[in-house]
Amino acid sequence: MEPLTYYQCTQLLDKCVKHSVLCADPNSPNNILVYREAGTKCPEGWYSENALTLARELRETPNAQELLLAELRKRKVAFSCPKYPEYPG
Image 1 (cartoon, helix red, strand yellow):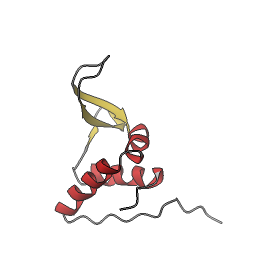
Image 2 (tube, helix red, strand yellow):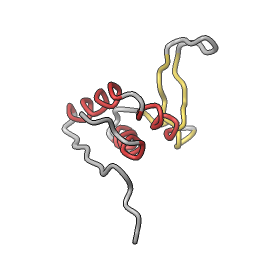
Image 3 (cartoon, helix red, strand yellow):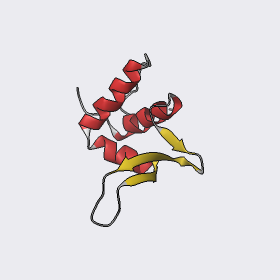
Image 4 (cartoon, one colour):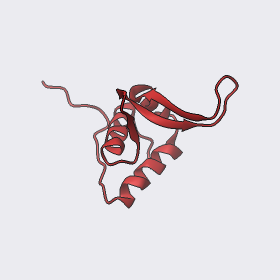
């Protein structure tokens, strides 16, 4: 599979939230709740992170892209998206 573009990653995250693969933060609608392993400065646990920041991270992680796409397929949800947004001409 060809890695997704940043735009496609934003759309994938949006679709995953809409179909309950991921969960939006109820206190901050532009954020998604993610579980992180412990780091050097942060403990393991759930974090609310900006969806656009997560899209940037997802763009660099093809394995995570495939995991999310597989979860959508399990739920019989199709995902298709152009590489880049269409601008009115």
